[in-house]
Figure (cartoon, helix red, strand yellow):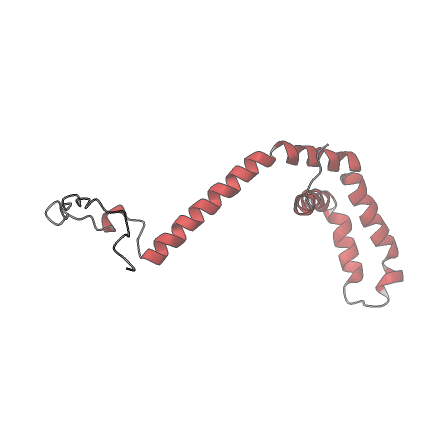
Length: 137
């Protein structure tokens, strides 16, 4: 299996945590109700609820499921990268448009008419000297 970066590993674990949280909502709520209003005494008062919550989460998302999530992440890594690059490109374009004052409406972009378009000047004639030869003498 290919190695994941720390950011990718965190994304995989966040996905596994979301799955476990969805599967163990009842035990999580029971622990939260037990812990509500307690500070120091929560450690021994809610110990059974905490153990039940942890075991439920381990059973909901075992190591084999985490490995499946990692393999799926690696399989779709290139697609995510392409989507991220496309999103960045669009954000940069939008930022440049905002900076230039261009609105999304294509009719708001001023287009010069043919009468306003300057005609190109004739090509400069080469004098035969090397470029920059007349400077600094």
